[in-house]
Image (cartoon, rainbow, N blue to C red):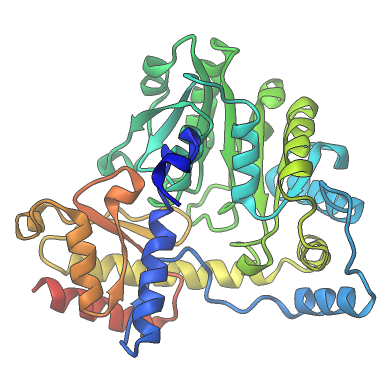
Amino acid sequence: MSHEHLSPALRRIAPSGTTAMTDRATALREAGRDIISLSVGEPDFRTPDNVILAAKAALDGGKTKYTPVTGTMALKQAAALHFRRDLGIACRPEQVIVTAGGKQAIFEALAATVGEGDEVIVPSPWWVSYPQIVRFAGGKVVPLITHPQHGFRFEPSDLEALITPRTTWLLLNSPGNPTGAVYPRDMLLGIAHVLRRHPQVLVMSDDIYAPLNYTAEPHATLAALCPDLADRICTVSGVSKSHAMTGFRIGVATGPDWLIEAMGRLQSNGSGNPSSISQAGAVEAFEGPQDFLQDWRERFRARRDKVVQAVREIRGLSTPVPDGAFYCFIDAKPLMDRFDHDDNKLALHLLEHGVAVVAASAFGGRDGFRISFAADDAVLDEAMRRIAQALA
């Protein structure tokens, strides 16, 4: 089918840069090439046994039919427990929507609210899908540029300078993908001061990486810190990163009643309910033991330290120490002459040397690449050796 059959909305967006690179690495691997993939945001740990058993029990118990469109009451109650216990957000089960992954929740919230020409402020570097979803909805992406020397965080004044009467959303992701940036409590309180002066601005708080915070401070989130703003905040979470359940495709979101209802209206027409079996697994993930998270966090922290040190030993590469998530966002500016200042060429060069990474430009950055350190130690050691060799 030719291009003119595509809708204007679809023509405005491109495929996800991270999944494109991961698919390419998979194809090369299937063709017999030895490729280490550090391109995908996925914990390498096994899904906890109690979750697997709960999903099996759901299958054996015949839980294979439709559920309510926006999720089972059991999972909404478990998600409300998670929002209260882990994020400090007071919410009722009725204020929760269960989606097929966190990405669907973000898509629905923006598609339900963003109109032609509405402005959405997106801190850059950004997660690849944020700007694509905004453009699909007809909105205008307003980049809020952040810098490595400030830990890829913005100041409240940077935000205020970009707000106009057309601004509808601020997208916040902490800990962040691709940079690992974490917004501490004081910074969020400063952002809240700005938001109080601009009541038209909604906030997407993407907290999917909340358990993976390596700072001494507990995770902070806007709806918990500033209950007076809670009716303007959509907080997104899930089990993909926290419980190594990426393939289960379960996200959860909470926010004002009107927004959750609107997202549900979209979901009822777009996809129907998330998988019944996955929902049963997610109930157990939220309600079962959480003590393994401490061990996972320590292992991720050790890998982070190893990768940061290895990056800094390679001439021409630098990276700030990420405060959360499992990514390093690496600057390669001194080397970019060799690659015609095109970081896609740099990423393809590394792929030829057996390591899949994602070019910084996929995230609205430049002159570098993102690697995921969600891989075991031996794999990371070999990957960093190959990168060093490729750039020597």
